[in-house]
Amino acid sequence: MGAGGPFGGASAGSIATELAAVTLTANVTTVTEVANVTSVDTVDAITEVANVTSVDTVDTLTEVIRAGEPYLIAVARGAITGRSATLKFGINTDVDDATFEDMWDGGGTYTGFNATAGQAIEVLSGSGADTGTVLSSGTGTGGSSTTFADTGATFSTDTVAAGDIVINDTQSDHMIVTSLTETVLTGKCWRHGTTPAASDAYRVATPGSTGAAVVRLPKCLDSTWAESVEYVVLNGATPVDTAGTDYIRSSRVRVVLAGSGLGNAGIITTRQTTTTANVFGIMIIGYNSSMVACDTVPAGKQAYILGWFGGLNGNTQADCAMRLLARPTGEPFQVQDEGSLRGAGTSSFPKEFATPNGPWPAGTDIKIEGNSDANNTSIAASFDLLLVDV
Image (cartoon, rainbow, N blue to C red; front, top):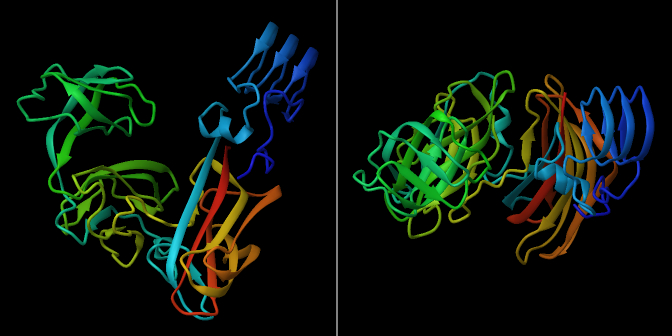
């Protein structure tokens, strides 16, 4: 999304970009964004305030939107309470003549939307080189932004080494180890910015071969649409189940630890354990990420579609039609926008909505589909979501 797109140009320097539910305001010089404020008095500047009930004699309030910072950058780094952003991207490398297919790495119609009953998710690879080994596990005693501690651990004795990964299952975060003692692991940072607490459950894993060793499933939705994160230590072609057993959606998986090959050696599949036809993702060899331009709005959120993209891949000469669709729970898919691709390889379109498309409630499925006038056409697509807490 460009800086001039929906919310893209809003910054700390703009005036009254978003002002909602303000019932009493006095002596306010500058307001950039205020939401759910019931009483403000003698305030010189407010850059961003959310859910504030009373403010008196404040010179400057900032949550910290930096000067000149685009609104969506502030959202993406977590500076705006109750807002988050999602970019969903996918690819279908084999779209055939006159048939609409979803933009995901499995081809055809996306099967991850078919699940209706919660089950565990199993993860497996087409290669035995995609395997990891758990060296240590237990309950931690604390840590910091760059460390993890367990006073009862024997990390060195367990052959943990620099380059291994410590997974904090309680905090849904991980860190690559750079140095260690028997009881403390040190890294550059926790990937998602958490800080370990006493009693956090953890695992330390190492690559078991040259391929992918550990994957992260960052958006597993259960049968109430509640969101969880799962880490799975791979075991080649043998399926490994998630800890959670009530999942009906999981539209993304990423490799977070790999061996000397630096990527997944085989196709990695994520699917429901019993209804294995409900495949959530098929990771292309070497991609280290699923490519699925399909997503579902989690519980406690409303989604606004900010824009979308379609593009031809490779050197194929083809004319393609693209559609953006959404389906609230119990309804059929509804077309929200259309686009077209013409030419060889470099044809693409980005679309930004001047008025965001939404709101879409929890449980809404969103996807992009396309067709082509030539067989074996490769198409990439993506869409941007702004998620708002409700």
